[in-house]
Length: 305
Ligand SMILES: [Zn+2]
Image (tube, rainbow, N blue to C red; front, side, top):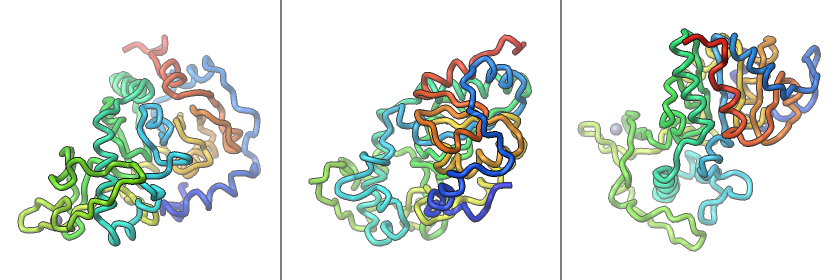
């Protein structure tokens, strides 16, 4: 059972880190295995595979994730711009930031980890098996790689939502509006464009003209409950769970993977670091997921189609 109180982005990490540092009760605390053949045997029998992905998968495509040392855009911490308060104070600045992020994505491509997941979904689909991606990433690289079953917990850089009528729409325009053309440079010396609010992206629903915002989940906002419910159903019915490019003490994996492991379902981590939660899981494969994931998900000799 997923804990609903953790659905607000702003509080997830601080609430979950502490309990995960200590081993609990009857969890299997044996050191996780890095035996690929053993993983592949379980993989070949799995009917419903859930794959939780995080920032590390995007980072391997060169997407700025605005974490750690690279957490700044101009002189602001990126996290301070990803809030509803920042947007209501200065929608021009926040739109410059998101315009920059959208434009950067035009130069990035899915990497071997995205492609391996997409290929696996298509192949297993023909065998009546399912692969579902649950991601915190907002860059749409999973869908560009060809994945179809995707739950984007944090929305997308390429969707907008109207502040007036609430309409959500896909939006791939470049630039998203004329006044943002050439704006959004990340250099700390760059001056704000100070675009008047009426010239920022506006709703195109008939007669609305409301201000659009990026349809992403900002800090302090709650996740879409429909998406969360569906993600929970996937996790409650999966018989194998992969955690890719995110440590299992960091949201979103911290929110989901321990509950899956507690059901006795094998969980396999693919990432660059060991964490306290790693010890709860059956497998840990160390290294860039673009390297470790393709051989883990490739066709197994038992697959007949
Ligand atoms: Zn509208």
